[in-house]
Length: 433
Image (cartoon, rainbow, N blue to C red; front, side):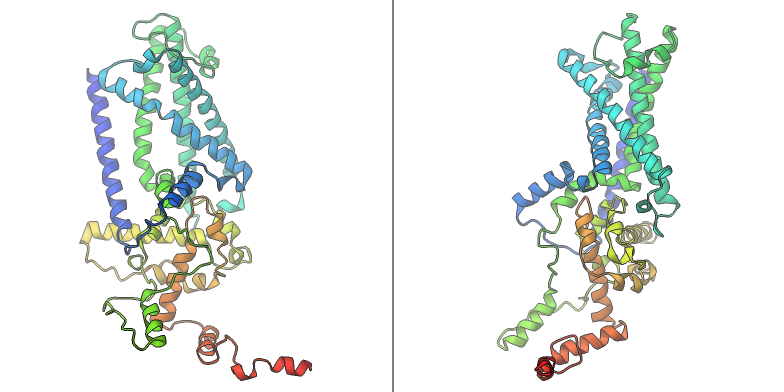
């Protein structure tokens, strides 16, 4: 009974702590402006099933893609067993689903094979980070915490899968010994090879089985509460992120509503534009000026670096890293969230996303080629944030380089980025004659 009480308290504590963390993340995402992304729902469901569930963009890099699918599928399916563990923990039963008979044996066997594949994938990922040290996992934004976070998660997965297989092995040996409470149930195609490593003493076997059982479930509850602070939160947000992703062609820029009204008024004098909100701002200076989908993008970022490794500006040595754009946006949101917790929602710390986190050099290094958007395995859009920061710099501050100011003047006066009058546009052709 004491074990059941401890288990129930641990379960309730974990759920409450996770709920508090999720509420804070939702609050931070809601710092952004509202945007309606509920159109074309059949296409959105298809997009989510294909990209998030089907992992379709991961296989663009086959080795990493296949290993990721093994870890993802294995980890998710194995955790179905958590339902049985929770019921056993609450009611003091053991392998409560064993009444399913041969289907139960099939499930346990499948879980063990998947656990082995998860271990294989995790060891490959560890080798890529610690031995091969791929360039994609480096960069100015990859400070101590992002690097450690990735390693922590991989180590946790190794420990959880090892505990799962060892628990099954000890359980299997206790079943064979006919120990009370350990009824014959399950099939153990992987953990049976661990049996020779286990002691023959019944008390020691029970101790090992119980230790692994508690380690496995408490580890999962701890992992659940680690997720909101980790890049691995993408295993949850990848689904809404792909559902709410931009469906328009990647090269299509969105028009600013206020500018559209001005243009309509210029072209049609009878058109009366709606009143403009006095607090309306062109572009974005801080995270509150971005929309909530852009902010959700930041929390969904896996920090895999596919965007940065595909960015032509970064490849040619420029300061821009699309991964840093997303990480900076998330860090700024987190900072504002902490300020709200500490000082209230109206507190102004005098900082902003532009300049305090993302520099002007970074945003103007972007070629707007969309390579980062195309490369992202969960349809994150760093370019939209860069463009909004640029729009603020241009339309609110007129704070751009001389060459850009000259280009804007030429477009306004000559209808082209060059300094020549439209009347002289075909002089080059006349010279050819």
